[in-house]
Length: 136
Image: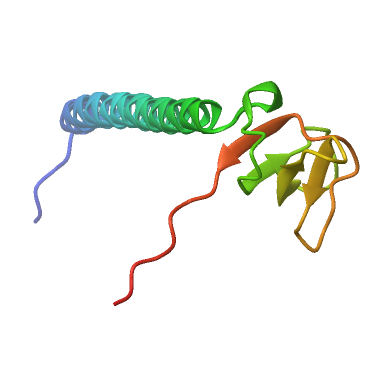
């Protein structure tokens, strides 16, 4: 005859299984919390990465704008001796740039535009022409 299983044996096995299940649930909860913490930290690190990146780009753009502001000068300071310069009319348009080349025509008392495309208004800023490229 086989071993007789008593109610006490069944209860002991059930209690052991329940204890094992509770342990495993705690273990699963521990890993779930660890994953949540890692995801939160990763999101925070990614957010900080993009914030740092945005700040770097904004700084570079600010430096670029400052450089442009140093490059472009008020039209009142432009040479009036026939020197060809870049001219910018400064009015908002569909196009990003409204630059032309021209010079001050003393007899006509106006800016003479020598570029193909003429700005719609009077120039507001000027800049010297860049140097010609060097021969390679």
